[in-house]
Length: 419
Image 1 (spheres, helix red, strand yellow):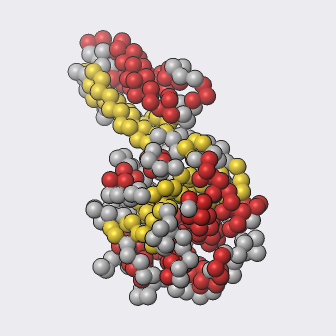
Image 2: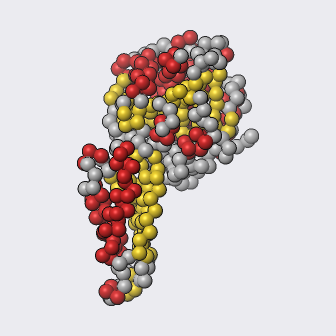
């Protein structure tokens, strides 16, 4: 298959030596030399993916690149039914457990303003969340673990999941699960870039590490009319103002303060003329909440408050509440594996505590089926850091090697612990 994302013949994963920082700990089975050969190519792969981003659900060329590179390593990857994601088993000892490692591969609908050689070549699409890094890290992990499997030193099976559509609803993780991505898996692990941590640090936390995240859309309709006579119609602009200012405050009074419930509207629209009361208005946003119990109650609470606030206006209300994802709740045993792996890969100083974020992550759906954990990979650059989901977001690319080292150690330790 030939595409804009097809790398040159032989793959970019075979490249020149790159020396590891002295703080990194040696990998087992003399893998350091192999990793050093791969790192420049992995960085180039990340830049290639960054230059050719694909939106959620449309990651066909990225999946083709992943499939090709894994095949060149002697593995047998398979595409998801839609062709926009990849699952690849690295088969070690047949009597061993199955551990899964997940990377998301989609980009965001943002224009890339960065003045770098690997700036996005696709107008209005940009890797502003680090998924290009996640993909490159997991490719590197696959190369090293394939070497161990070839030499009979992999104590089980490691399943690599390159997942589409993390940034949208319905979530891509549900596609992976439906395609058998969790069959026989006993634990699953993932990384997410964190610009607030420097390279060499890994943020770890037992319990919830992200918030639940749902989408809320409210559409209002009325007869419309003249701005000189609002008493003869339904003033939808006034109704819209009440919706976006009163509802977020009122729903937070219906739940415990420590639940962290937060409704923020990112879109609001009504009308086209200064002297015409519109007949349609709309607001859309996200609801985020930190605990599972409140997440379960949230749709009912939002519906009641929206009705109460808008009833006096006379507007006709259509509420669409789209369930997104529950909080990512890290299993204590899986965090134990991550903690030991971080110390073994990056040194004890690499372990960092991390707070629960209000961001959402569909890795949570995997954890509804099997225990596992999400860790935060330090990618912070020198100078002021740019937050995730900003178009100018970029990473310190030394984080790719750190991520590979961490996830190789995580896979090996998880297999050993599960035997």
